[in-house]
Image 1 (cartoon, rainbow, N blue to C red):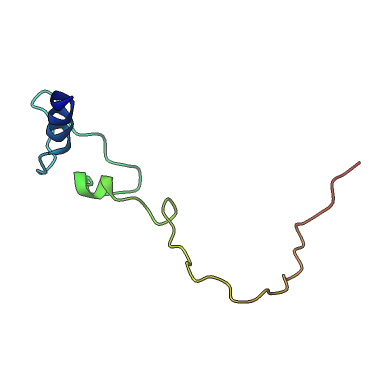
Image 2 (cartoon, one colour; image 1 turned 90 degrees about the horizontal axis):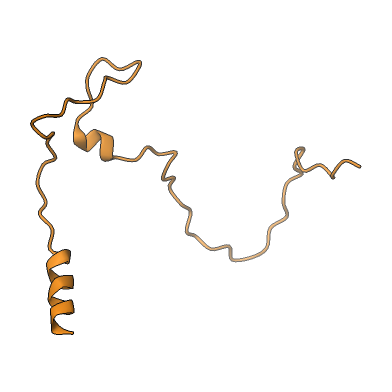
Amino acid sequence: MLAGFAALALAGCGNRAELKLAPDQTSPPIPYGREVQPGADDLLKSPAQAAPARNVEPRRRSQDREDDPFDLPPED
């Protein structure tokens, strides 16, 4: 049991260093429409559409919804 905790502790301590390509690898091709090859940090950032900001303010009272023109009944 002690060995399990030691292995878990060792797995948790990671090295934080700059990402680099292996000696036998080449960088991926430049994305279409870009002039400069993005770096590792740029590729690791998620775009705003992938992680949108959330409105965490709870509603304090009920509110009437606006009419939604796309909320159509199912067709027969």
